[in-house]
Length: 256
Ligand SMILES: [Zn+2]
Ligand SMILES: [Zn+2]
Image 1 (spheres, protein in one colour):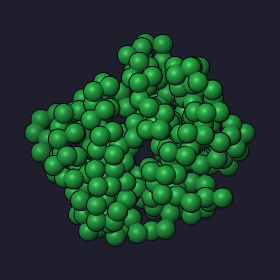
Image 2: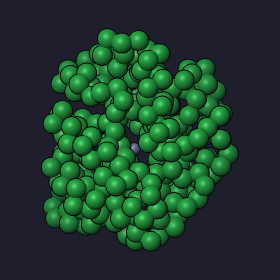
Image 3: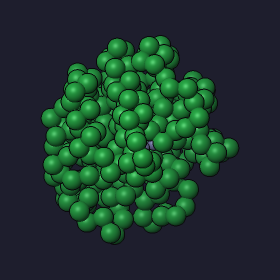
Image 4: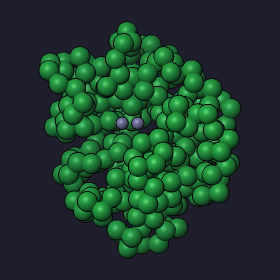
């Protein structure tokens, strides 16, 4: 059993072939996936997928690179997260790579999400790019350790991973960990304890080797698990079982 802890199967690259996505998941042994929201405008699409497929869960959040929507309030996010298929708040966080200038608004949006997560007692899905110190500082000052969550598509140092883990966060590795130029990240993955580790595709982006450059999809999370098993020199089944158990424990999901 494998779980893709972060995908966007509502995006145009994948949503036209959901039946195909589901059957390839099943063939690859990927039993569940979390379809992560990036805006409130597209939330109904995400919820519709999670309502249609019992093995797909949903989250509620506005991505740090999302523009053109009214800023959500913590009340509004918590209210939307009451939907029975919603298991997390996010993705939220800081992205200093794709945004420049005064990013006060992005930090405020991040804080609002943490407050919403605490209000509804759901874990956070954190997107952090070129902003590790500010991300950790805001998680700390808003008391995010109370709900915990996941540092998704992790590409930072072991020190950042350790400080996030100390605040009840899991570390999720994507297809990036399979890239031949990702030696440093592979070293981080080796040192993140298996009981704190999640795997994801972030599909349709970041297809793992040997599918690099193609459209990514949840079935390919198997390649991430294989890579983790090689890096840590442990069995594939052990990685699959641990990362799946971590997913269900973090998101408090009961499943058949
Ligand atoms: Zn992200
Ligand atoms: Zn994402």
